[in-house]
Image (cartoon, rainbow, N blue to C red):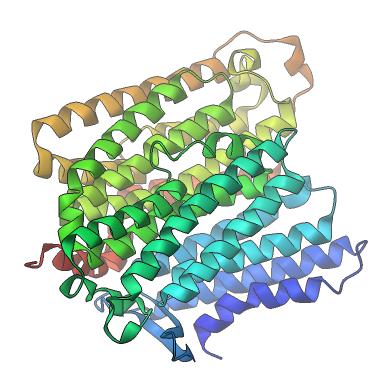
Length: 489
């Protein structure tokens, strides 16, 4: 078994082992899950140390034919795009485990779903074959559905149903596009590398329809307006660990899939570039304005995800090196920052109760640990210089300006202004309002929560000063994508 197979199948096999545990063995179940997730993080760390960033191709590759008749292959590998996402998944999964104490019912079933979700997400990032990719994609969505449906809030059934309907529709469109493209792939192979040659054989009008299908499939997960309807309710109702993974990792699956599929359709992506631009700009403004109007912290963070992930779409739509770099940096920044903010939002709900923002009052005095971490992270979300968000958004905005000029600068300036407005409003309502009787009994972050939030804050600031630590890994892979979409048609 190769190192990537070990990384991929470790959580799935551990979930199988957990199924034989007795329901009351909570400590053993949690202990095994912790060991598995720690081992995952160690493996991804080792891969990071052994990875050659100068090689844009997949490394540590594994290849095993599954069905020669249909051209499907068990193919795994990592490059400068997938390895950082695998590291992020492993790290945030361990963080989510740390805050899983809030889960009090059906403990064994919860950890089985949790580990299978981990398997599915890792499979999406490690897969080098579209058949494996699609199976892992669906596995992650099914597990997330059960996490929402069984361990979510009071509106969990509505949230999980909405999530299922949206993602099911997106998956159908993705599958239709995969089947359509499969007919034009040389030797009918489902390898990712084989699809890069489909533009030579597929008519341009069919390329456009295929890319639209992928855009619908990945756009639901990104999420792109108007395919975002499931997100806010799902994030509000998700248990804290599932919310961390949903906001920090699962949304990045959509962006990652789009980055993988765009090089296969250079003609189509240039034809659809105006549409992608409009969706990106509208999503940034729309998400920001709705975040500004929210009265609860979770709702504000949910709508801000739409605005922040639209920056990723903007970078991809620019189709230039700087914009693509900004898109990938924003994926990393959003993954870390969204997980940290969701951790704090969940902790606030546990320590002070789920209230409207104006009802919290002066948390600066009552919860100084929470206030310090939250203010730092909210300023980072605003794109303050010295944060990873600043480096990411600056690259994406420059890429947009190089492509669309003054129009881009007007839209981007408005987006940045709206972002500052809703984040500053949130800080004022949380930390500078009058004291309320409800808050007399609140407790501050415990040591575990403070350690997790502080570590994520330090990572955001550290990468903000040295974003080249990420770009050094991804730049050659992004350059390869740029060359493919810029090649003569």
